[in-house]
Image (cartoon, rainbow, N blue to C red; front, top):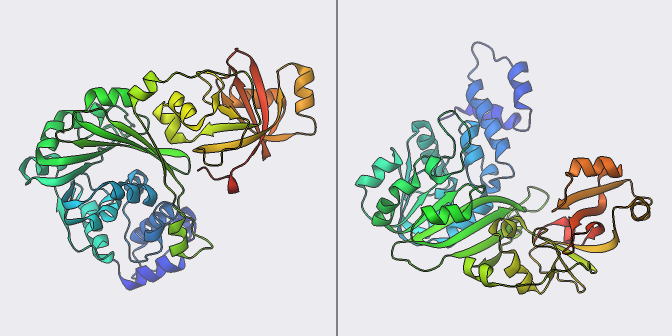
Length: 414
């Protein structure tokens, strides 16, 4: 789809600033370089450098305009989805750039990719061939229309577009395209298993009221940022769904070889249920001990705070603070672990003693009346360094400032 002259131009300029390149490079009238296509490919490859590393290192991969790349799953998240699914036949009704289809494809014998945008479908078909995924059949069609006429399969996957016709982001399931609530009966009629990717901003309780037969909810974070909510529907399931919280670290480009970098993708899961959280009783503490624990993004999204405290035998500081403490070190706690160096009230004398010789720190607030910016201005503390300050509220209602150091190796979240 690109001539060799254009490909060579892409290789030579793959690290260049695309905007400057567009302004400065003027191909001659007889040049065979397709500058528009080249700029799209350079920008696309740069966009997925830290998102889909194995594709970034494959020069033959073609890229669409930027929006589908922003919306596609990261390699870590796509590989996680693949680990959940297997069988004989699979259909992706909202194929997009094709990342999810490609990583799920080895788990099934028959794969159908469906995408209504002709250009995206053509690019995906080309890339599947580059990747050696020759058993994927591509369909340039509307996903709902395809769903109505397709034969039943083992598994369906849907990632509805979460933007309105005006281009604004939407969160509610009913506002996405296609409307999953309206077609969920048809989805479960066509497949025993249906995996739905939804916005990480979605309220889980609201989604459970709207969706039927939900067996599992996977809250997927990458590098401690909540990226996806995955709802796994099972046709005849009637029980209570599991909430599975997962946080992964994404592979890094340098300096390790690719095989080593893939091995760095870690998956740590905790499984809860809403009834477990509702029926769990814990006590809250006003005593900050030697270690402080901050749950990772997936656990924070789950809302299973009491269950987490009970499971790891750590004391919660306040019902709304979502910080925990213990006198013993728990290296396997799913989140950031800090050693408490000092604790201060907010009177001037205590603050002066705690911040002595400290003019730089990372500030976090948990259940505290000021914003980070307001507190930073009040304390006259610059951003950065190795000190972490937590402003929070204890069970007795007292506001405290905790001075801590990060215990996590290389500051990575487990």
